[in-house]
Length: 420
Image (cartoon, rainbow, N blue to C red; front, side):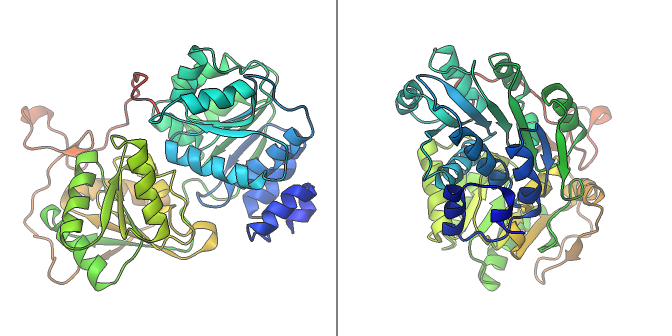
C-alpha cells in the first residue's frame, strides 16, 4: 500500500514525500481512512509506529475542507501529557500542513502566555496543548471550545498516569456534544477502555500490536549490579562500548541531576531534563541531544513520551520504573519505525520485584549479564523503594514495605504553576 491509496490530498502527499515517507505504517494504514470517514477512533499501537501522522494527516485534510477558525475559536484540539510531546506533535502537524491554509499553534506551561494569547485571538484551526495551560487560558477567557469539531487525546494512558483525568473532564464540559473523538494510546489498559466508553461514540477500534508489547527490533538486556556501583558501571559501559546519544532514565529529579553531574565530571557530556527544569533549559538540552552535541541525556519519566529521535541507538534504565507499563514507554524511545535499538537496564537487588513485574507484563524473560569488575555482592540485602525513592530502614518494622513492592501512582490536584 502507498500513501496515495489512502485518499489524501495532493498537498499532504507532497508534504509526506518531502519528509521521505513512502509506505504507511500499519497504524497509519488503518487510522487514516477511518478518520477521513468521520469515525470516532480508539487506536493502540507500539510507541514509535507513527500515530501522529495517523491522526494528523486526515485531521488536516478534513479541516481544510471547511471554514477557517474565527476569533478565539478552536476547530481541532490535540491534548498531550507533556510539553515535549506537545512540541513534537505540533512540529509534525505544522510540517504536514505547510501547504494548507490552516493555522496551527502549540500551548503549554513554563513559558510566557502572551504569544499564545495572541495566536488564540486570531483563531486556531489545530491547537496542540497540555491540559493545565489550556485550562488556565480558558478561565481567562482566551479560548473558545464551544465549536470544536475534533478532539484528539494523544498518549491518553500517560495522561491518566499523570493525574490529568479531572482536567480532561473539565475540558470536555466546554465542548459541543457532537464532535469527532480520536483516542490514541501506546497501551490499551483497562482504564483506557473505560475512558473510551465515556468519550467515544460507536468507535472504530485499531490495535496493531498486542497490549504492552515492546518493539521487535529492540535488544533488551539487564546488567545485575549493586546499587552503589550503578554510576560507575554506566560510565564504564558508555566509555568501553563507545555509546553515543544515550537516553538514561532516572527515578527522581534529584537522581537525574546528580547522575548528569557525575558523568560530566568523567568527561562524558551529560545534562538532565525533568519537571523542575525551566522550559528553556529543557528545550536547550533536548536540542543539543538531538543534534548529537550532547552524548547523554538523563531524564525522568516526564520525558518518556516527548522524545522522538530518529534511530536513537540506546536507552538505559538507570532505575527501573515503579510502574511496569512505564518500562514499555521508556524503551519505546529506541527502535522507532522499524530501526534497531538497544535497551539496557541496570538492576540492583532492591529492584528484583520490579523486574519480575516488567517481565510478567511483557511476557518475556530479559537476558541477564554481569560485567567483569562489577559483580554484585551475593550477600547484599534489599532496601525498600517507596514513592520513587529508596529509603532507609522503616520506622515501624511491622509496616515495612517488602523489597521492590510497587505502589500505584497517586492522583492529586495540581496548582496552576505545577501544571504542564
